[in-house]
Image (cartoon, rainbow over all chains, first blue to last red):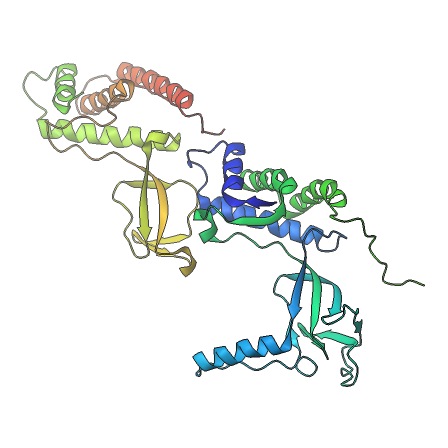
Amino acid sequence: MAINVKELIYKIRYKAKDFNELLYSDFDILEAVNECIRYVNQDKALKNSDFLEKVQAYRQEEMNAEVAEYNQNNPETPRDFYDFPTTGVELPDDMITMVDVIRAKDGYHLHPIPAVEQIDPHYQGQYKVVNGRIYANTDFDLLYRAEIAQIKFADLSDSNAIVELPIAFSDLLVKITVMILTNTANTDVMAQEISRVANNLIPNRRYNNIKARMPFKV
Amino acid sequence: MNVSQAISRIKAATHDISDEYSNDRCIEFLNTAIQQIAGLLCAAKWPPMVQEMQLHDGDDLPANYMHSCGTFPIRVTDGSVTFLSSGYGEAIRFRYYASPDFIELVSDTMPFEGYEQIQEVIVKTAIILALNENEYDIAQDTAIRQELLQAVASGMSGNNISQQG
């Protein structure tokens, strides 16, 4: 499903005619692929695409049990316990935009409230996001659009390492990466080219047929 | 080709009947010529010039290092290497263009074994260097060397299917 890093680098070396590793080191290719991934992230950040939607489960008791275990093992650097309604919990690092927040026990869609207001302690139907943290008076699941993770240096020698994009994106990554390696084009030209290639792919790549709900409906 | 054969060629070409050029002097000519040709072949990105090693933080660059194959996350100061980040593990697989080892003895073999045309250019270059120290007119020899170099260059570009542009 996802793109294998080794295969990707093989294709890039073929396209760049550099199987002998004479022109580009693995480090060159790693940096170019990561630059390409960052462009794709920028491009798809605001698009209505679902292939990188992720769900993060927030369960206060389980998370506090983990914190307690950590604090027991690391008494010098204790971590704070979670209190979802008052101190909130950090959003995922790879989040670009939020899609939905669902109450864990019954799937009820939580309602956002303004960031300055307090979460109602008697009502389990609200959430708010402020300063990179999400607050709610219940356990919940967060559905969000994640950004594609960049490749790390260690991934180069790991035959199982992947780029979290559908295989249909393989040629996009190869083509743009080689452009980055060989061209001195400025970023605007590159961003336009990414946008053009990605636009050809993204609208056709929804996994399900559910229509995206408009923010305002009657 | 052995170094002794190359020296004989140099002495014959320079009509060195009085043994003006010692063996050591001829080896110096050959070493200079080898470095010149190695520089050209590295610039042409000829694959056999590439060597690979595991480079650690704090290592010295190898003595025969000419330039690296692409970019590596290292900084070189006074010949020694510093990694730019600790995220690259113990060692980096480092590929670089290397010059051949210097010739030291008459009994050594010439570098680029199996590549007669390159050895030919090296000997011709060494002969020109030798002649240049005397009053000989080296214009014709230089022209021949240039032709040989071109022949090698076109041969190399045919060999090197990976080379771009």
